[in-house]
Structure formats: structure tokens, C-alpha cells
Image (spheres, rainbow, N blue to C red):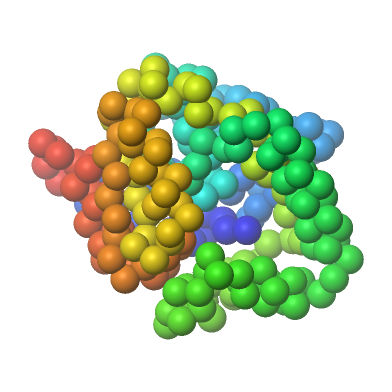
Length: 244
């Protein structure tokens, strides 16, 4: 439920080293989908982003993704490996391993999408962030700002994204990890036990992946510990480079 606005506070520091491009995924922020709902799924979203890079004449770049965006970023680097030089995944996964898991998750996501469409959005957000996954975020001083940013989204659009880009609908990428050749930084929060376990398995399967546990943070590292987040992003991407 994030958007490119989640990163506006960090762009000035990152722009000392990089040209930065932030994108609202279908169903999020200001992006408008004019086609059918299939354009919200992972394959079509990835193709649309590649077309955007083509229009901007960006042949190669670094790629960062958080959570759902991280799942998409991993899919993109596997599907279009010549377009990306390095990858950073924050609190992300390669998807669910079995069709049984994916089927159960699809059913759960459909119910959640219905709630998005038919309930008060602020109440939905309150219930969503009551999950244990976001305990440390709720206790963080930035939490009210997070909610303000989330309220900028449109719940009907988010529901379409959940139905099509949810983890139950994406292909499992676990069996692709051993052949993944793009240097990858896995960022996980020290209190995010679920994703620490997932990313440990990723690091075991993927020789080019290095896992970094970020202190004083949970699932949403860039909000909870922005100083460590920025430092790790720059150190990984700008190794051997000078400031712009």
C-alpha cells in the first residue's frame, strides 16, 4: 500500500550518488491503468516497467524493491537479467513454494480485497497494521506519517493490485535462485523473524546474495531506521564510485 512518496525524504541523500527514479506500481499512488485488470499482474507490470526504462533510454540500472515491490524486483531481474546491475530487496520473498500455499493465499487475498472495497479505508489500515509483522512500526515515531501516506492511495485500485499482484498469484521464484547472477543485497529488520528466516534460505540458495540484518527495525526498515537503510543502500550500490 505504499507509493513513490515513501522515499521522497531519502532522495536528496541518494542523489548525491545516483540519478533516482521512483515509480508508483499499478493500483498505487498516481499510476492509472487504462487497460483490463490483467495489467495489474506481475508479468504485465514488469513488462510495463521495462517499457518505461526503454522510453527513458535507460539500458542498465540498479533496482530496489520493498515487500511486494521486492517480489516484483526479483522477478524482473530474473526475467530481464541484462537490464540490471545490482539488486536490493527489503523484506521481500521469492513467493510461495507450492500451489496449495498459493491457492490458500489467493482465497485470503480475495477476502481482503473485498474488505478494501467495502469498508472504511482508515479502519482497514488500522486493522492491517495491527498485525504482529508491523509491531515495531506501530511503536515508531513515523507511524502516523505512514498512515497519512497510505491514505493517499485509492482502496478500489489497491484491491485490484491485491487480486492480481498478490503473492498467491505470482509464480514461485525459489527454483530460480541458484541461477540468479545479479549481485543482491537482502535487507531484513532484526525484529522481523518471518522474513529473516525467508531471507536466510534465499542467501543459502543464491550465491550472489548477501543478507544484512538492520537493527532497531522490523518489516518496514526504511521508515523505522532510515539512517541505517540509506547507509546500507549507498554502501552496496556505490562501492568504488565517487559522488556525482
